[in-house]
Figure (cartoon, rainbow, N blue to C red):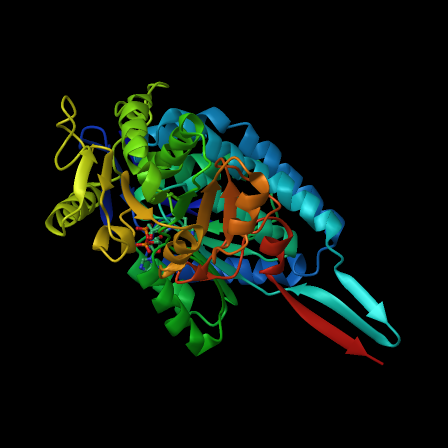
Length: 471
Ligand code: NAD
């Protein structure tokens, strides 16, 4: 049984002023495995004050000092890679193979930030003008529950590389994972007050960060609804905001795609992180001429996506994070059926043998129209909608006919053609033929998928302001 009663403020673990105690529930069986005492406004103000006072000196740190700090953070997090992965499997139900990758990419974000910082000129001058890139100030980092270590490390790495001090408000559903990470990062011996972490409710801790005039910037990963409220409420204190929000990512299967490769690739994109991924490729666009072949290929390929214990390396799809998320996925599956889509694989209810916990059936709908709810709204579970198209132009039109624009994929044999199609997709990232990543490439969305970019140089720039001095 885990018991967490402390927050991380000014370089130390301090008892919570907030008194609300929340159960932590294991998603595989619905049992209570821990209790966390949640932070309140007082704890948050205390953390902001610590970050504000640390900013006085850290805000003037050199590139070399920041480089040393991100390196130390990398070493400290690396030392606990296995513990961080185990916590993600236990508390969140992340499947172990994917959880390991997520944690690694979080840890690597420190190295990527170090590299990007070396390549980013912080001073430029011409004539009698000197322009410097200055840290924006205290940054509030507010994150979702589906990749806790990645979000925390990525935002922290970028903020520190820019010279900002931070107050992190992780999801209250990630308290154990956060505890392991902060214990690890404590070993990096950071200047006091540079890193502060308060786990608590969004409408209490998150709202205080958004409202507090001593916080200059909010970097947020989460839902569109909360993202809008941060933009609106942050305007009062002229907050700079980066918003990483939802997605309804299209995967365009071109008519020259080899199905043996393309379909498994499309399913990986749909079901990664058990479908609880902002980038999940949840709309598969297929040429009408190959529709029947695609259906057969999907049914065959599903054997490689077993549901099960997330700790088992053979498992591809684990439980949803919570009862609420389980119900959300069920309601969308019902909606899909009501609106006339056809269930090819999966459907409502628990998979056989997994009646306890929050397991759902990985589900593929065919005969989906792009204006149906299941093709428009983010489900955040393993539910794929297959939509057919007549021509390449129509595929591009359907891909772009979405409120979202975070991620997309193009699958095809003629790579030149795939690139041509990719260049017409209104998304922050488009991958060709496989889910792939580059920690220096920007991450973020067009349209309702958000504002601003993270990763590498783009992520650091989001925590900087320019100042020009003219003589
Ligand atoms: P959420 O918006 O409910 O919560 C995100 C965070 O915001 C949590 O820490 C929450 O406590 C906090 N919060 C809630 N209300 C707040 C308020 N009024 N003020 C300030 N903070 C508040 O999202 P979630 O359910 O945790 O995560 C799922 C969502 O996150 C999905 O929509 C998903 O697409 C999105 N997401 C986006 C990305 C990306 O990189 N674009 C990555 C992962 C998840």
